[in-house]
Image (cartoon, rainbow, N blue to C red; front, side, top):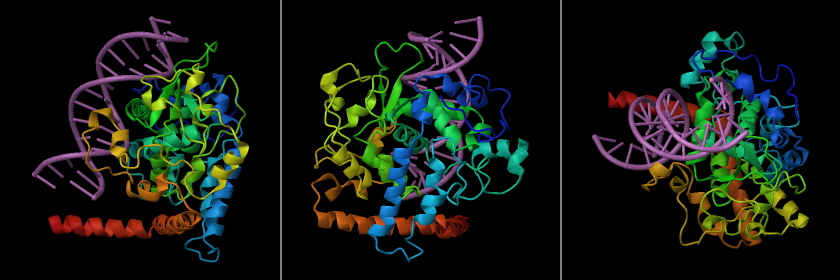
Length: 378
DNA sequence: TCTTCAGTAAACAGAT
DNA sequence: AATCTGTTTACTGAAG
């Protein structure tokens, strides 16, 4: 059970009066604590956060460029990653990347800003700035940060509300979007709640290990260089109340036996689905290495287009806007140390790029580019 | 211009 | 009965 610190979520402002069933203030925050699984979303995440922190530190150290301001991710760690604290000290994300586009250009932002006294202040106000992450990534982060690596929808709401207070004042359609995403996005899979656990509506949702690297990569591309920290093993020991995490335990921590063959909800009572390998050493390994810890299990000849992981009704193939190329090649094969080192360098390059982006350099470049493009169109 | 994808709204059914 | 959850369809706008 978790009590949100007063004022953490901020006032429920800018609510659309016409939306009644999905009021975030009504159930998204307060109601979360009533769920047995709520603890999974709100329990202290010290282990994971330490891992995140370590990962961030490693990303810096590995590059041997601590003095290089452009590639030093310490500030990022401090500014962003610490905002992903789930232990009750979470702060609304208020970093340059929170509203990378700089104005909260969402359709909701108008509502929020026009009715919120709080949001009348800074342009970077997290209460009015839409997160730069897609719903898929938000869900991914929420699930990955839960000890059991699975969350009910309600807790996903709570996590998002907790870390992105923008949604507390946004029209409640975002919950619909979350559910829509969970249903349509193949990255997310539904798992049945434990047998004998009748309280609580709905199922638990987890990240399909198949798509975890892609989500991680997308997260990294979306201004989150330390995204691999989100592919961490569960912090809590296995228990009957949080079974799904062991589904993802394997050599690399992210395999799921027979899952791909399973249609529909995963039945957690089926132990034959479970890969039982819980070597803590391995856990440490993949939670602390800078390389993505979830090597793909798909045939190397068939790199999964991320578009396939998205909407079912949009599986016609074609381009995937989400990053693909980093998911292909050596990442999915066996890696030598040299490869890892190369990847570390690549990651640092990406991190540097992300930092430039965060600094607004790329944003302004893109903005000016778009501007000139529009002008040229005219 | 076309295509793809993300986001949103809405309707609906089933579960609680 | 009300609410929540999950699914599906349709549409729009941004972006490549």
